[in-house]
Length: 299
Length: 299
Image 1 (cartoon, each protein chain N blue to C red):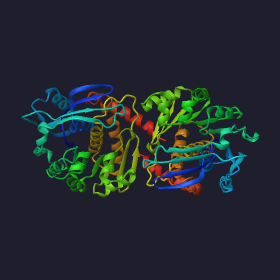
Image 2: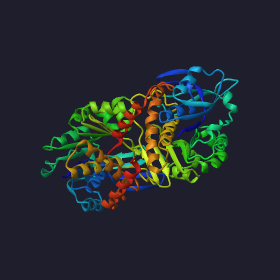
Image 3: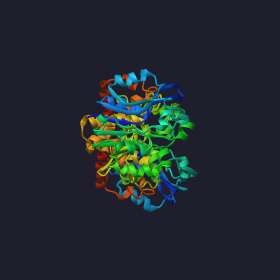
Image 4: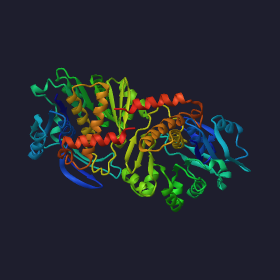
């Protein structure tokens, strides 16, 4: 089954202690679409400006991503500029130019409305809700967010959560949303806000899954060279959704395996700037790294 | 087979945001002996002063720990005073009174010299070496250390490492010892210093094992109530050694399982002050928590 991805397509200017890129392909929907595309077909909904390089559209189409929902508006593409320190964790935002993304209010193409697997990448929760209402009968809806929406759109987010099957949130956001410093208590409190399952992303320390049937904890892949962590969470989400859509089911065991696939996909995002590495691999690379991951974690 | 444990027996005065204790039973050898005792017999080598409460000796003997090597000297027992903040990670040391521990230069009782499984808890690497030379033919030697010895006794530590089968070190110590911030590179560099295996302890984020045959990564148990993290690393080491000694072997698969047992044991150390919880459990509690750990991590 297809994965429907709604989010941002952006041009990123990024500096890390290991190098820099200017106006490189980025955005939450870009990373998650490309990541999901390794598992099956993907429908992309996003907005770009007239300045968006055609080579990037070619890349998406080469990955067999359906770009019918990629609207080109008069104006400039969303741009983000950030800088990472040596810890390569939280970037400092230098500049955010929303440009055409400021007016993003997606209308799904008619033949996207039967989508079963829906990933609402990090955008305004009101818009996430409006998108969701355009999908006829979704089987699994996953949703990401960020501290900005927790601060400024808490009500809308809380209204949305009961409609969500898998809510993805990072460690500090889970603490902020619930006011709990203990991550176990924070995860459980997020679950009580309504989503069926909660995934807490801990970056280099791995991932936690909270469900009514118990908790799953898995470490991150340990990597020699992390170049640029931008897009790791979205790539995780794309792999997670892609695997579930391929399987066509979302029971507990499948959710756990999907998380492992997500972790594996994220490793390819961080090994180079932008989507350079992620877009250059094939399914063999994924299977090889999955075997390494199993070897790393089995006891 | 027995586990020989050499280290400190202390009286700890500890404050955490959740409470405090004064002159409570502590010390690296105490935590690791009691932890190892659940798996089989333990031989303890340490020094205490005449002020050491007999109830604590009773506790050790109730756990069938051989205290022939627990020397009582004229003077006061080693005391440590520390305070934890809300993150419950690195404590602030308020006071350290070495007392009789300052002159600790252990002589193994004759019938300890055939010990096969040896745990050299965190003490001066010169003393660790002197102890090791008194053991006839050890099968597995594990050794812990701390930043103080890395700073002040680096030469002695580097001389000792090639004699060690399992070197236990925490995340920041591994970085300090090697000058590498990337934990994968740091772990590999520690391995090159001579020990056959290196265990990097990451606290609430789990454990990494580095060997010439590959790496193992496992998350920590996720706990609702962490009261006092003091002794968690030593309790981990005790469970790790106890399990291996019970098994009588130390191949790669056994090392991984021993690490999981170590993680399980550590959870009992942190759930209350001192050894209150750890000394009150039985093997059924351990088996139950091991099942929970498997459920938590299996995909």
